[in-house]
Length: 256
Image (cartoon, rainbow, N blue to C red; front, side):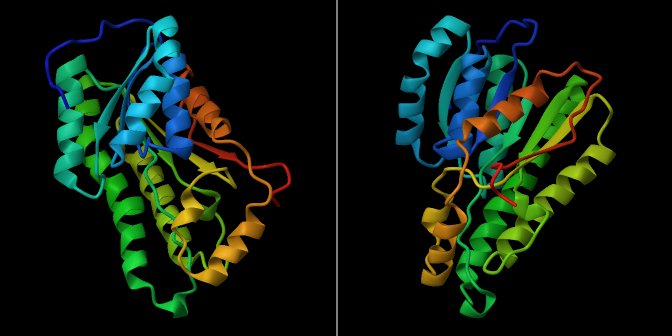
């Protein structure tokens, strides 16, 4: 990331936002919406080609809104990588207002399939990745006396389904960590959990177990678009400073 100093002037409602997992799906939709609303978005993910394409797609909206999107390669499982991104963002823009912890993976499988490497990957991305973001941004928010954590969890944080034991466990952990952060953090720091239901995304593409993949095709027959989740994030960010939206659950009307 280019750390050349170019502080962003404070303007009412305009925020500096890091979005992880921004290369596709919900993360890309969140980044695009926030750029269109005039925010400066630092979009982090491993697939930098996707991020560059996202920057191109949002360039017109950025020009008209005064926002912007900076693509940055990021691996949330690397604690030093996350810390460096937060530091570089603060150096470049003078502050960090929001961290949207969206990066996640979902290779569902039955426990008796013993796909331990995939379990480890979910724990690394969905849980450790979130903790790395908190560890990097919390001191910044505390020093500033303001900041907003937004965690993208899942409806899986509230229910367990066959093939989803480990995934749901990681998302419950994400919910629990974020709720604990809300209770412990200084009142000047806002904390929000967004729990999506079935959303059109690439998450299911990582499923390698045939039975789980087939079940997911049926389960995802009725899905909402990622911008529905982006809209929920926007709602949480635009509330007055004394209003903390703790959790929003968003799912298709046909998902029961």
